[in-house]
Image (cartoon, rainbow, N blue to C red; front, top):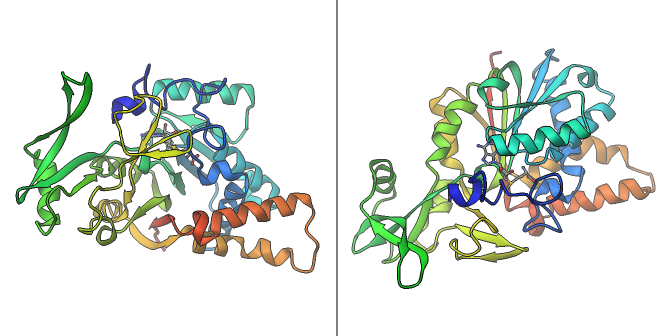
Amino acid sequence: MDLVLYDPGLGYYSRRGDEAGFREVGRSGDFFTSVSVGETFGFLLAQRIVHEWEGRYKRPSPFVIVEQGGHDGRLARDIVAALRESGSPLAGNFEYRLVEPRPALREFLERSFSLDPVEEIRIAPSLEEARAEVGLFVCNELLDAFPVDLITFESGRWRELRVAWDGPTGRPAWSPDELRPELAAFAADLGTNYPEGYRTEVCLAVDSWMAEAATLFKQGLWWIIDYGHERDDYYPPERRDGTLRCYHAHRSGNDPFAFPGEQDLTADVDFTRVEEAALRLGLARRRFTDQHHFLIEAAKPWLLSLEGQAPGPATAKRLRQFQTLTHPSMMGQQFKILELERFNA
Ligand SMILES: C[S@@+](CC[C@H](N)C(=O)[O-])C[C@H]1O[C@@H](n2cnc3c(N)ncnc32)[C@H](O)[C@@H]1O
């Protein structure tokens, strides 16, 4: 999965999509994200960032916003524009660090920001190099793009599904094998109350990622936004095929060996695993909620400011995007946010 998504020459995210070098996300790409809906997502996150900076965090300066998985930098541009517009003194007091560890993708980003620079944004090659005393971390759909390992329940025990080459068909195929120790520990926790042929996945990379992400700030907030579930909802026996899926031209598929390097592969996030890793590293859970509740709360001052006014075209557009982002049958319920914190009162 790592190869088909990130191989520097052939991986889905490393291959040239549009002219700037990025895979297009949105209408002309393979899938939509909250960022690709329009600038409203960044606008609302910015409202909430101002609220935190002015309230609980008592206006620290400088304040550092770190984003990872920012793809072409669109969310970064939207948040910075909204902070400048907000009228808050935060506007002159923050830096935005976009973390991109893969050289090929960093090169795309650097080119894009040299063509259209934004003073507050700089690109960091690692989380370590984005560290700051106090700040806020945000990622949208980063963890669902991490490679996962597959396991299956056969004849009363768990096995790992590895990828092998199938000579007769000339294609890759699943090949069951003994569990590696990290997977055995995970499978032991799941237990054995599963139907024959049950298949699921686990993202071990979350642990090492969190070990780095948790050291970003001495004090701060971490917003992890993605589709996914807490563990009890992720691994019920009824979810027989797990959540690994593929996206190609806005069609969802279930053959990860099709169109190698030309389709996105993704799996839901096990938010319990993320939280457990974070708690081991000294972060605290502030809340776990869905995008509907999070963005409606963030939007309250803006919505109140509109009361009694007929919306002009720009506001009407923002309201339409707001509905897409928050309506439970659109993006409001599927997307969740885990808010973690290290706060020294
Ligand atoms: C599903 S896309 C989401 C893009 C964007 N955040 C959005 O919401 O539109 C996942 C992104 O995560 C990036 N990514 C995956 N692993 C990463 C890592 N370790 N560090 C930084 N970015 C990563 C991919 O290159 C890709 O741009």
